[in-house]
Image 1 (cartoon, rainbow, N blue to C red):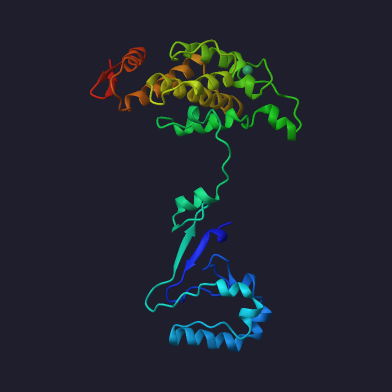
Image 2 (tube, rainbow, N blue to C red):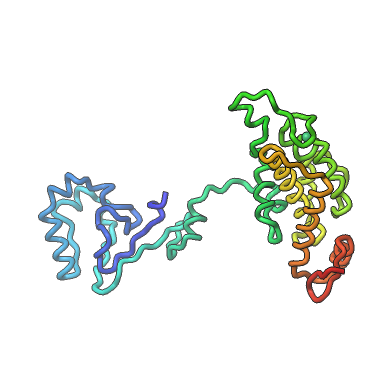
Length: 292
Ligand SMILES: [Zn+2]
């Protein structure tokens, strides 16, 4: 994958192979001229190399230009003493640029279409731990009991949080009684949310909101990621540590984490900023929130 993007720029020629490295658009010479041919012509090639080094002039071995007529088009650079050979990079758009890992990543990665929910998960103010779990949850890839049962037989698919439903993504993060209580308790903190019927609907609605820096939307996104993260953490605590916490305790931990986040933001004063601040018992002073 990388090779097709690498282009050698010949300086003194000391670190570049004339046969195997790509220093011209046609590709490496070894693509056209086999080892056998090269071996047979080794004396001529040696002579050409020394004429290049001594006189700065390159000559193809006898008969090669007739045999491999593409060689006529070949631009043979002069070796320049004291000039180091360079490796450059050809972008997907066929432009020659200096190598950087950032450019290499852009050219090599596979570009999947952007998903509508990307901004709901990844945004400047997000908590990376929460965002990561939400990112997996949204693709239904967390190891819930229904998924584990697909490769490991198990009769027990019971949700550990409510002890009353089958544990799958839809249940765990929304339909479960425990999760439902959490969403209900958070409802008053959300900005412009209706009665959504699933986590997907909540995400969809927020993906549709305009204005990335609207503090109301930022709070919504922080709340969604925190809710999913804490529900998943709670479920793991019950399964692996046999510890249970009530919805009230978990909700208050969640709200604390969001309040702390809000206290760390630098924001301009707007009507929404004041309103959201009041909801969280915060005052706007000099581009940030302080406890009211
Ligand atoms: Zn449940």
